[in-house]
Length: 301
Image (cartoon, rainbow, N blue to C red; front, side):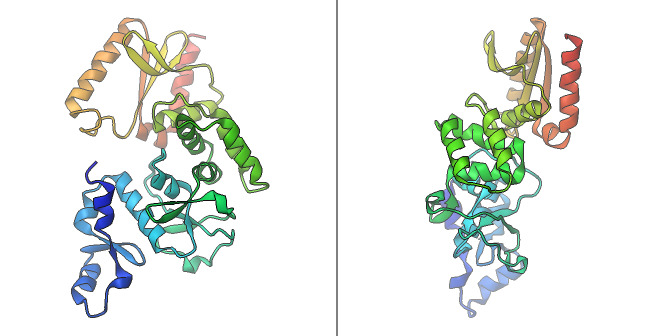
């Protein structure tokens, strides 16, 4: 982590407190030496530019949460505040909800933010670091409703890994009555598991399940290694997340690549066919991923 969250939030500037006479601050805003993350909150560009993507999105969501009077962070923005698994897309708007369920006129939406429709009960609102967010279960449900089955599975997998039960998730969905797209949330809960090893592994599994490919084992041990997906008799699918070769999470990049080659050599020597996919493969070419898995399975049908 480039900076701890306390250091990042401490660098924020509340523009509501800046007087007109403080021309040096306004000059920095004009020159983009200070970047507005939300209408009333800015951060030094030097700080923002050195943050990894997930922290830039975290601090942007946080700034909008601090900026809001009535709105609550929801969906993927709430998930980021809660440390939940989130799939990174090229663009990501901050998601907001009004507890009343109403939508403000679009012209009143802050730049870079999007309001979601859906009333919130008092017990569906939590507070993190002084920012109001939807409760974790409501957060996952809204991700499924608004971002689809696959991202919903990722969110529900995270909650199951943290000890929540499917019964708890299903109870919350039932209590939401006739909210839009609850069917998708129910399907995502049914497909969720506590056995997933990473967000992108969850996403890959959701793609497979959606395509009707369901006969596989997760995190199966073969010799000294655990593989992401094992399709009997001899197909292995491995998923490389965004952090796999970032040079820090799994050690130096060269060392991580060497370990993967040794691992793959061991598995192929045992007679396994190994397919490896990156996060970009899954996000940008999901149909190709499914087609290749189907093709390999057909060879051994």
